[in-house]
Image (cartoon, rainbow, N blue to C red; front, side, top):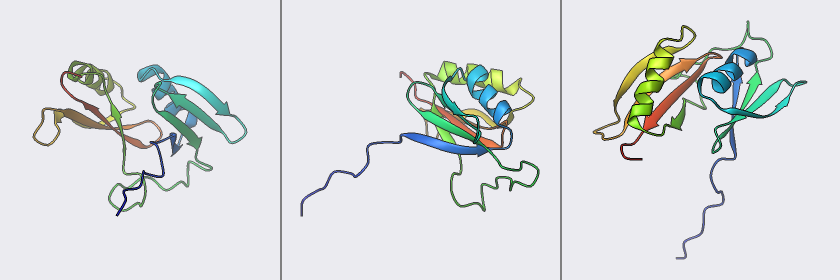
Length: 138
C-alpha cells in the first residue's frame, strides 16, 4: 500500500465568533501584540495575526441572545492553543493577564503532562478560551 500525502498543509486561519468584536480585537492587538491584517466592517469582522497564525474575529449577530460557550457540551472549538516563545515569556504573560480584570485565568502556568513544557488556560474578552504553551529551550 502506498502512503499518500495529507490533503492539507496546516491551518490558513481560525475563525472565532465573539460577543464584543472591539474588546476581543483590542485584547489580541494590545495585550498579545498581534497585528491587524484586515477587516470587513460590514460583517463585521477583524483579521489579526502574530505573523504565523491568522485569526478571524467575527461579531456575534446578537450578543444578548448568543449562546455562551460550554466547553463540555458544545461541538466544535474547545479552545485555541497558542505557542509562547519561552517559559519565562509564559510566566510574564500570566502576570499580565492575571492583572487584567477582563481576563479569567482558569489556571496559572503549570507542567503540561509530565513536562518539561508548561501551559496555562484563560478566557478572554469575547468569550473565547485560550491556552498558551511554552517549551523549554525553544
